Image (cartoon, rainbow, N blue to C red):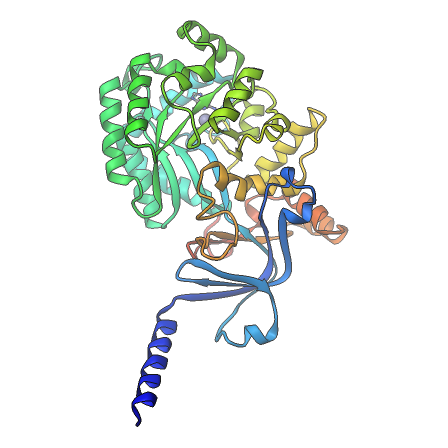
Amino acid sequence: MSKNTASAALVSAALLSSTAMADTTVIRSSFLHFLQDPSQVNNIFDAYQYLEDGLLVIENGHIKTLTAFDAQTAQQYSSIIDKRGKLIIPGFIDTHTHYAQTQMIAAYGEQLLTWLNSYTFPTEEQFSDIDHARKISQFFIHQLLKNGTTSALVFGTVHPQSVDALFETALAKNMRLIAGKVMMDRNAPAELLDTPESSYQDSKNLIEKWHNKGRLQYAITPRFAPTSTPAQLQLAGKLKAQYPDVYVHTHLSENKDEIAWVKSLFPEREGYFDVYDHYGLTGKKSIFAHAIHLTDKEWDSFQQTDSVIAFCPTSNLFLGSGLFDLTTADSKKVRVGLGTDVGAGTSFSPLQTLNEAYKVMQLQGQKLSPFKGLYMATLGGATSLSIDDKVGNFIPGKEADFVVLDWAATDLQQLRFSYSNGIEDKLFALIMLGDDRNIFETFVAGKSVYQRDTLNLR
Ligand code: GUN
Ligand code: ZN
């Protein structure tokens, strides 16, 4: 063998072994994903890509390519998973939820402040017990995956071990999840109170232990202004300054009595948003749930600080909190993600959550197109959480989190589907009629982690 032939043989052996070593999955199906916010483009076709017959190639848990199917390209792959007849979209991203409230979803009859005292606080007390926290963490993560949600921003409870339990469970599934321990040092039962110093130290320890471990990230999580003293908010701000890469996650302007209470507790501040702003808790990695009753000045502050809103329609209706003004958010280019807000929210399903979002817009004389809705639940959520460089669509290099949807899972959906025309109409019907029954399979980092037909669906 000549020297040249020998080295060519070596090169091709190396190529062969690197290809053989790559963990490759190839799927043929219909695909939909977003490239831009539909409310910010002149031509809707610039916002999304729909491939009726497409081929997705995943390598080592990341997107390699998404192309229209063609037989010649397909030939190079020894096996192709055939999901024709289904629709594959990026995994849903839930930008606000409370795992510890799973067991008290659908608690009757109260608005925010009495709901917290009557139902929420007694439930959260149980999370001092790590075994209980582990049990509910597993149930919660399963519910996320069963509903097609592959990433979420999650409240723990005041107990640091509640966050350990959730992160352990998410790490085992290799999920991209953001969570934090509640900071709360007043206006709650004594069993649920920390102190400014303990909340600072516990949160710091959790950041050191979990932030950027696998795909996990940490959020500094003061519950809301009424349950934190100025001293605690100040230490929360200090922590954010020490760890600028971590998130801030809290509630804002959800309920009129809550807003009046904040005014009385912080008379020296201009308003509710200003409380958080004063303590250094606003900014591009700060996510505020609800933001229903904002003043014009507060809208401007959102814009100026590049802070983010989690729109939680089922919760906002369930607690009678009010109608979120998505149109103003869009006109100001404030980032908005979709939040289920379980347990004030009444469903884990982003489809059901969009169903209610549509009605919230109708009550304000506005429309929510299925494109905008599904954008918010995928790429818009990723943008809101500043993880759009990693997930949210099928751009090559991104992590392969996605969901295989059944267009029509029930007889009613099938009838409606058979009379539908065009992609927009089909997607709208899917949002309005769909739920966890439409989630056929969920993939996290290229691996199938939930299959509807093979799991016990109790
Ligand atoms: N404001 C403060 N705490 C909570 C909570 O747990 N849920 C909701 N919806 N709002 C809150
Ligand atoms: Zn909430």
